[in-house]
Structures are given as C-alpha cells and as structure tokens.
Amino acid sequence: MVTIGITGTLGAGKGTIVDYLVKQRDFVHFSVRAFITEEIKRRGLPINRDSMTLVGNDLRAQHSPSYIVEQLYQQAQASGCNCIIESVRTPGEVAALRGKPNFYLFAVDADTRVRYERAVLRGSETDHIDYETFVANELREMDNDDPNKQNLKRCMEMADYRFDNGGTIDDLNAQVEAVLQKILYRRPSWDEYFMELANTASKRATCDRGRSGCVIVKDKQLLVTGYVGSPAGLPHCDEVGHLFRQSIGADGHVSTHCVRTVHAEQNAICQAARRGIALDGATLYCRMTPCRTCAMLIINCGIRRVVCERKYHSGAESEELFRQAGVQLEFFHDEIQQYDNQ
View 1 (cartoon, rainbow, N blue to C red):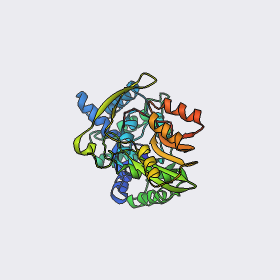
View 2: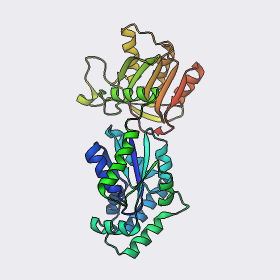
View 3: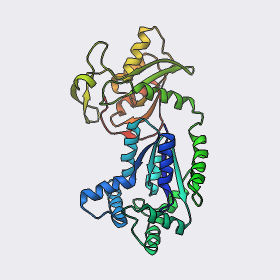
C-alpha cells in the first residue's frame, strides 16, 4: 500500500493530480483542506483563506505540527488502499509522514499568473480574491521558522518528486504516471513482501476491535498465517459483539481488551503445531508489538526474529521479554499505536 502526500503553491494543480490518482489509479483521497474546513464550520468561522490558516495553525499548535496529517494517515491506513493526502503544508507534517512505510511526497508548481487564473476558475470558498491578495496569501505561507505553520517552500524542497504544471492537464498527468510506474512497481524487500502478506491476512479477521494479521516465515518461505478471530466453531465479535475485560500492565496502564478472540500470533502458532511445522529459527511478521502472552509463545516455539509494522503503546514488557530471550525485534517505523486493538 502506497501513501502519497501532495504539496505545492496555491492553484498549482494539486487537485488535478488528485483527480488523476483517484479516477485512473483508484487511490482514496484524504484532504487537509477538507479536514480544516470541517473544523472551521464547527467553530462558526467564515470559510476563507484567513480562517484556513488560523485554524490549521491552531490545531497544530494545540496538538503537534503533524496532527492533521496524522489523523488523515490513520484514516488512510484503515482504508487498506493506496491513498493520497492533499495539501501538506508544514515541514513537521512532512517529517511525520516520512516515517511511514511507502510514503512519497509530490510537489507541483507553475507560473504565478497562470495559477491565479486557474484558482479563479476553480471558484472555491477561498478563491474569490484579487491577484494582489492571491500573491500576498502565498507569500505568507511560503516561509516560516515555526514548524507548526505553513512553509510551502521548505515542503517543496523536501519532496521526492516535483512536477511543472505549466502546460496542459495531459502533460501533468503524463509526468505523474511516469513517477507512478517507478513507485507502484518497485520490487519490495523481503520484509516488505511478508509484511504485506500479514496485512492481507488481517482482512480475514473477525473482530473489528483490531483486524490484525500475522505470517511466520523461514528461509524466505511462508510457513503459516494467522489472524484475529474466535476459537473454531465459536461466535465471532463481528456477529455477536465484543467481550471486554480490563487489565493493568506493568507500567500501570489500564487496557480494555476484547477476550472473545485469539490473537493473530497465537492462531499462526496453533496452525503450525497442528501441522507439525517446526518454527525454530523462523521470523514472525505482525502489525504491532505482540502482547505478553504472544511474546512468551513466540519465545517458546523457537522463533528468533519478530518484525512489526509499528510499536504498541503498552508493548514495553514484551520488548523486554524478547531482549532477555535473545529474540531480534524490529519495527518498520517507530510510530506508536495508541489504541487497544485486541
């Protein structure tokens, strides 16, 4: 799954790239502009460029420089599809997205007068302005030392790919397609390949509390798969609802877990046991840090390496167990999953 962020000058053609990705490449679209607009409406403010800047900066200052794109990225991940996040405007947002797997930043630009004329034709709530105001708005957003505030110049410098939209829509689409050929069909590493299989397995999960999947591999060969679900023959959460129970971790964190289901790692290990498949020296791929029970099973069955897509907020105890047992633990990135998923 690929996530693309788009930055660029005002009226440069970000929406045109979005249209191409959505209509021609089946990307799912998430918009910073739309996210802020909803907040503007909630606050009862006029929908214009000043409100967009004010509210966007306020949200980032209240939470973090990457707050808005982090919210959109979570939605993008939940979709399970290739996604586009439009209107990335701060270096803090770019830095946060850089830590995500398979993320690429696109930047688009064009002559200022051409962009103004396009913006007038677009006619959105923030585009009913004269040329001088258009230029002033852009200058205000082009450079800022505060990571919470817009800095289009720096964002464009940080882009993986830059596009010149001085020609026709077909010209821009051709540039975008040439880049897509590089990133969509890049040969994945073995870890990326098996993690994608784990994410595919998660789609079979039967508990919407957290649709996790797992694969166990040895010598680059898939041995078994597993996903979150109830024991064989028993009702699933998706059918009858969750069975919740609270627990307190070693760090004092209180977690609310669904105990109707068997975790993905446990199911995969059970599948191996039923089929007489030895797991000594194997590698396990999963979405986030395994729980303590899963960690102990992983250690006991001889798995020597665990690869997680991200960290779990209460996974420190499992990390310590793996360290003591000599199990190699790796993460695709250090983002911490904040909700109880199982």
